[in-house]
Length: 457
Image (cartoon, rainbow, N blue to C red; front, side):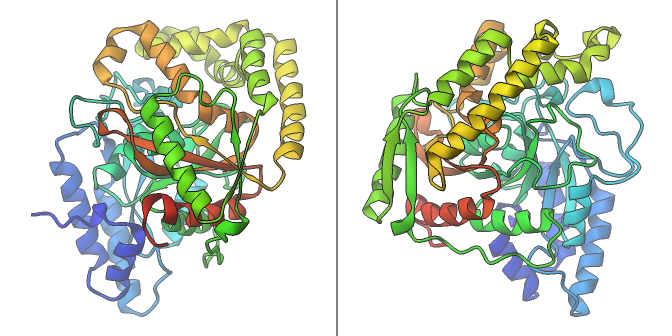
């Protein structure tokens, strides 16, 4: 029977590796075996077995020589298939890139985690070109949400395979991207911690883009503490900064009362409100306010179209005008082509409004932490979404709504599991902070996680 190293937190597995109870080669072999044996073969698009074993052997040698690179030494990591891995084509979830030139180098953050001693075991599936919050992919298959018990449910996107890989216990951490919610949504749907860093916190070299003014990165893992360690390594730090839980008596939460609860499932609201009650009982202060920018963002999208659609169309316009469009997911094509109607004056109007709204909201919330449900509903079944395009687009919009507000306002955010809703599916509580306040957000998230999940940090 394969040892479940992938089902451990980074902290748990690191203890075993550092004290010699588990060797990186043994861990890597078990993880690769577990992935190959798993019934859902759509989670990964490719295993990096040869590379992984080479990295594991090097890690093992360092440990035996007393030259450990730190807490992440020998820890397996999976990469969303839009990070360049040297020697392979980066598909970005699309079959039109299968025969693209192979990457000459690793993406910058792949190099950073390798330098921290982590072992790259494979590339995970995703929504094609990262352009959906649902995770459905007609080319490589749609990973099933491992938490679904009644029928196959979506994993969330676009980092679908990343979320499913961690939730299924195949790897302790997977790295995704987040342009409108693509880390926080699969984290919420799969009962994981998902961290969207402030845009620009990590180097973006070698990452296939969707919308450069919105793209950000982050890990999906089991605990906020794991997130803190991976974040430091992704920034190239040789030692993790000291981020400790902040005092809950100093935690000032702002909960919006507009937009984010519209149409929310009762189970989602109940799980969120219960978590808020627990935080208040431990000393947190809560202010419920209307954030006018939320309504204005939706109005801007209705008037001009969305920023992500404009930039995605600019990126793919030649592809959409040629034969490759016929090989793409028709829903991705349809949604991307909407960007053709967004004129340059429209785009400039969106950018100018964005700058103004960011400044207004920053003044309004200050150093407070913003809290609301990561997604207004739990992960829905796959079958109906695949069969009905209208339902697909409507659900995609609702799924992305809460998280995309943070991308537009340039926030950082952490989704923390906070219970279950309909069909006993996970619910996520989203904590966010204004741009650049990642350390404060992570410290608050460490404290909140301990109360919400009942685990010590």
